[in-house]
Image (cartoon, rainbow, N blue to C red; front, side, top):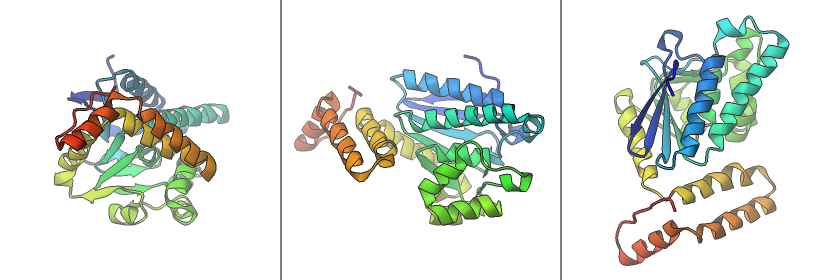
Length: 260
């Protein structure tokens, strides 16, 4: 598919998806949200892709937010649909079953932070700024920010970000566990792809089991979550990769995981 707002590049089993609206600081409008939905549906169907790296074009922004010019003209009904469109995309990414890494190269504000929050790992340049500034516009986060922040960093930091509506630097975000790792801008791509390559070499079904157990089982009671983990653990024993991984360990060699 030919995208208007995205650039797609494959590096082996890693798919790089770049939001390509640098003149708008990669702001999310409806067309971009729909293109991202299509792009991640393609990833879900492509067995050759094991990891996704998501970033923004240019050096200033990952995604600076939703497109304010487009939002300004929405009716309440249209705003509801816009929110649901964004939330559906974020949930699709979150439940992709393959690791998604946000490579945060600059501003991740509003919808941009919400997009990063649905990714499984977040690697940020130490110059990045993150925040939920919607209250400054008379709004609240609409793409899942209130809920994912609450679950990821707890009530206090979630309220700090959403009520004060002030961006925080990457070091503060890392201290709150909002960011997985912080590196110098010159090291961001190398560090992100080193992690992506490690994940790409792992057993895909095992990674999916981890993601499902944490993201789905973790939203249930402890007893239900433990049962979910047990079922995912048992299912792993049906895979060729489990046999390969255990055999490689016993033979003291590197495993060659096929995803089966």
